[in-house]
Amino acid sequence: MVGGMSTIQRLTDSCLLVTTDEGATMLDPGFHTYQSDLIDLDGIGEVNRILVTHEHGDHVNPDFVKWLLDRGTDVTVYANDAVAAALTEHNIAVDTGIPQGTSAEDVLHETTPMGDAPPNRAWTLDGILTHPGDSYGPTRTAPVLALGLLTPWGSATRSLEFARDLEPAYVVPVHDFYLNDMGRHWIYSVAKRMLGEAGIEVMTLDWGESFTL
Image (cartoon, rainbow, N blue to C red; front, side, top):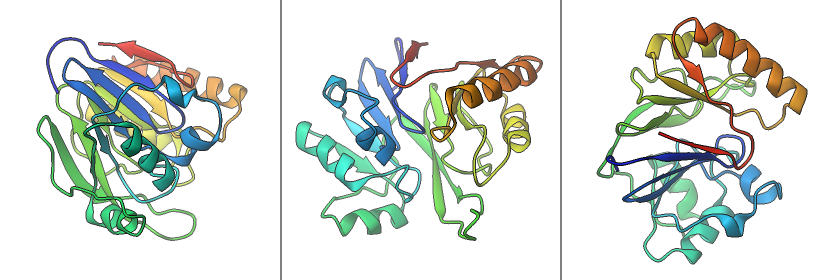
């Protein structure tokens, strides 16, 4: 899905919608977007494919996926084997391959406070955006990198190091649903200052906001 302009919309938390001339891809349709009432779901256009990084509910909510499948005419869900197994229990078919126009790195989720580190597929929409999920394992990025800044499985310091190592042109902060506005604005200001010194522009998007490349 490369060519022409690309619009990146942040719904809530880690859920992103990337729209190009070829269609719309949703990444990580988690329960925050589906259940928080912060987004007008009916305002979401038709989604052509869904990419899921890992099995945690804040990144994939079966009810949200079913809602997207029911309202679309030809929607495919792509994910790793662990997500496929989890969604199969909800009668949702998952393609574990890598669709045209994307690439992926299969890495591990960072260890959580509960001690688990499930499989994590970092997705890249070629030439547009990389969503690493909840992992610092990916070794490459598209021009735009989705980046969790304050997370239960990492730290702001490690996240900024991760971004500097990959050297995207832009960073879109994600995974900050539980921060209040003051907390988000503070960590955004830190990221803008520190990543700006490395020539990386931080694109802060509130719920539902977007920007176009």
